[in-house]
Image 1 (tube, rainbow, N blue to C red):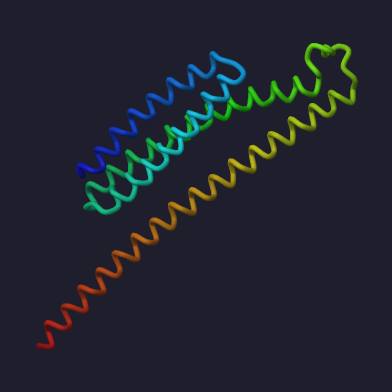
Image 2 (cartoon, rainbow, N blue to C red):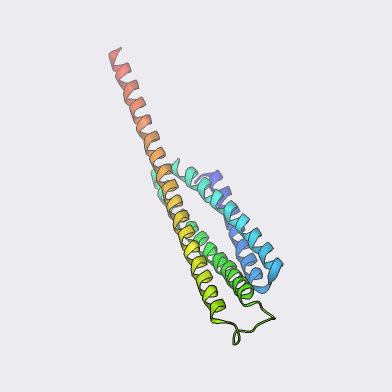
Length: 177
């Protein structure tokens, strides 16, 4: 197995554990501290994605028998990363939903029993728009990642085809002489 892949793998595992701990800690705080924790976690998620991409590129350049094992590991890591992303989304959305609700209902000035129907309708509409936007962003991100994976795969295939053509060309040139 590649030492470079193993190095990336160690970094990813440490980062994943660290992000899990930060997610647990973010659930325990509120307000600005929560926003700061979420921001730190998102930066870590970006770093984890970059490590997975690097591992993917490294694995695709290895022998087929090793490559298959490493790509299976990568699928597990991608699944783990997606789970972490979902946890962060839940943490962030609860914070956003509560903040939107507080703004709409003017917490402290009016309680939910005396709030007007108009305010409740605005709250529902805002929540629906927020959820809809979140879903569109998640779907777009998924399509982007799938497209990127397809691009990497195509480039790898083209590289292999180029190598085959160069080898065939060299063989033909050797047979001429």
